[in-house]
Amino acid sequence: MIVDLRIYTCKANRMPEFVKLYQEYAWPLQQKYLGRCLGWYTTVEGPLNRVVHIWAYDSQADREARRNAMAADPEWGVYLRKAAEAGLLLDMENRILRPTEFSPVR
Image 1 (cartoon, rainbow, N blue to C red):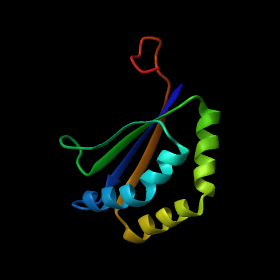
Image 2: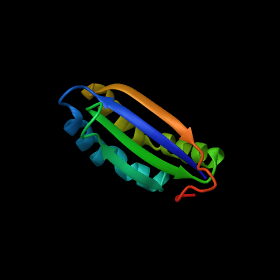
Image 3: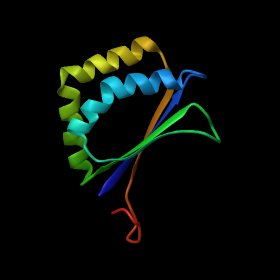
Image 4: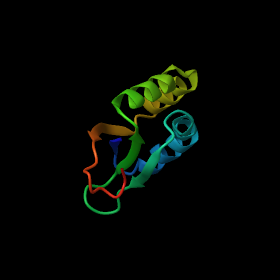
């Protein structure tokens, strides 16, 4: 298993707009294609205006196949266009992580 850790930094005071846009347009598609969301969070303390979500995949090949299928869906393009037009994000980051042999989630 691998984990895709995604961190999005929103413009100040715009995080609720991003969450709403994501929930309406991206979340249904990601549930359909990606499936294994381990968590979807917003920051309360520390660096603010951040959204963090974590996805599990069987392998890097599984991740690529699922994300490619989602990218091919025209509705994903609608979400990307709406997100770009809204201009809510400052930065996007993702990290691929591999659990240790003693990790509770494997």
